[in-house]
Amino acid sequence: MTRMNDMSFDLKQAEEKINKLSHLVDKSIGDLCNSSPEGIPQRLWESMTYSLKAGGKRVRPVLCLLTGEACGASFQDLMPMAIACEMVHTASLIHDDLPPMDNDSLRRGKPTNHVVFGESLALLAGDALFLWAFDHALRELSKIGTFTACSILEALGSLLKASGPFGICGGQVLDTDPESYGQEDKHPWEVARSKTAVLISSSVAAGAILAGATFEERSAFADYGDHLGTAFQIVDDILDVTGRSSEIGKTPGKDQVQGKATFVSVYGLEKAAELASGETCRALEALALIERDISVLRAFPEILRQRVR
Image 1 (spheres, rainbow, N blue to C red):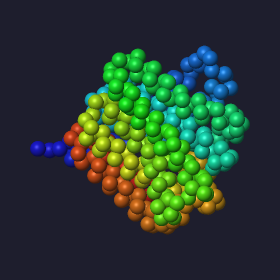
Image 2: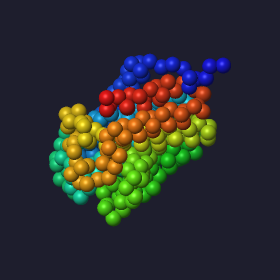
Image 3: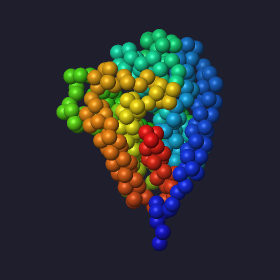
């Protein structure tokens, strides 16, 4: 019998579907940002939506949609959860760019939030997006009525854990606080998994949880997201050295200026590329237990790897 995960896939078709979903996410975010809900101060709303609408690869919401679809859910029903994943990611970027953190003036090809709105408003916009992500997803998913209350809470719980001290917040400390730096050869891995991979893994898992995947499938999807996210961070470290601001949408070379222990500074460019390939292979291996049509998910790591070619 032919296993679903052994189905050959066309990379171009996968890219087309990913791009289609990215546009779908952008449209949903645009509609949400144009809603102007009552009760939110106008300047705060402008700051929140400025960064949320700034574009980007939309990797996390797209992965949430793809995983949920593979397990039988519709894109429309999954969209509130997908947008919540993007809200959390955007919030983390706003905070990451602040002067006390990475002090960057460019994000997604545009001036960073604090450059446009000031540091205080940027800080509050990030806080607001972190919290609004869960409020929005809980409210909208409950309205849809497709998913059980238990699955909604479990999916949101996965995203919540990835957002806090066990995830992004802890990862940011490891990345920016010199006193928290660990053993040099292990430090980049710890940062990658807690700062980047944890949210990608949670986004993948959230789609699977909502769609009713088995425990074994959820675990496999989460492992896939972990290795994919780690590869994503390694590629980002490489692009910080080799990329141009017009290509990566942010200021290159900042890791070296700030003296960060990255995969490139610790292992060198060639070895870092090998490590990214290794994590890509492990991500694909994690999908071996999934007997569903996951062809686009299988293509995702290869599309990611092409960013450094």
